[in-house]
Image (cartoon, rainbow, N blue to C red):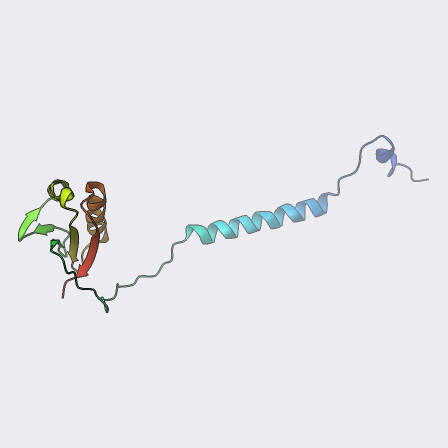
Length: 133
C-alpha cells in the first residue's frame, strides 16, 4: 500500500504545494518590476510652454523683477545676484507689495523658481508671473 504519501499528515506536518506558491511569487515579482519601471520613468515629453492668453491688470503699484533668457536678474535696469534680490525683498516685506516676475520665455525655470522662493522666504507679498512680449 502507498501510505508514505500520507505519513507526513499523520506526524503533524502538512505538505506545502510548491508550484502554486512559485506561480504567485513570480506574478508578484513581475507586477512589482512593471510598476517600478513606470514609476521611475519621467513623462519624456519635451514641450515649449505656451504664451499667456489671459491676463489680469494689477491696480496697485508692484515691484517688477526681470529674469532674462540667460538667467540673470534685473531690477530697474540693474543686474542683481539672487542674494541681492532676496535682501531687497526683505526690505520690502513690511509693505506687503506684489512682486511681478517678468520672465523671458527662454529663461531657465530654476531662475524663476528661485525668485518665487525668495519672495516666499521674505514674506514680501504675493508673487505673479508675467511674460515678456
